[in-house]
Length: 322
Image (cartoon, rainbow, N blue to C red; front, top):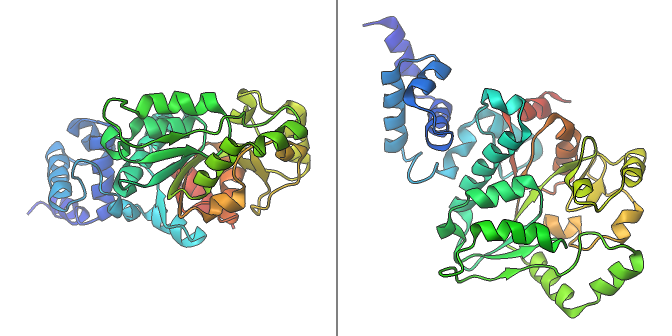
């Protein structure tokens, strides 16, 4: 028997190998020829690996999320940070250069997880940002048809643009609840007055009772989403950095230990607190990028996430750090 074939056959028993080929074929939609070249195996072997994925139940209509921990990096991240799950899609060359493509692939991964965990009658709390939009865009309409959504902060436009992509008004039976406020008010007095409005209190109460939450993680370098939306100024970002902030969740800034930093912008912000976010049973954070490593680490150290979806390079960096 050909020794290379024997060695290749032994490799098939690796669940990580099966997950990798399943992801490339079913999520990234690479051809079997592309997969064979990428994994340095024959095209026939790629086909046999895909067949094993189907027989093992790893692939049904989606990649079964119960098998995601097979990625070794995911297992190690789970152990290091006490996560329920860590999803680390296999890297494509484009991941190192195009952030929008990275976010799109991460969104597909988060969508796979959500589709396996959302149940009819549950409520999904939604943050804002590109990774959240990419996730909701990739989630099947069947998965969300009977699941209510609630915004975790103000920012009507950001949430409406996301929901328009996922709702079928003719068949969906669940409701969407959006805080009728900006993310950050123009003054502390206005923020306080808005918090006292009955509708704002109603939606915030629903947000605190969400079964799941999907959030992005903002860094302080480059052009954070909250700055792109016009809710913070360069001066406020400079103040955050000077105070030790490394990132934000839902517009709340925290340091590398995950502790909330006392900043004036928080008094103008409208949304649930990070303690309230942490109390939601299943919080999924979706983020990657070299400029977000400290922010992701801080969110993990603060215990705000139950599930992390990130790229292989970020996962390795987080694991290599002491």
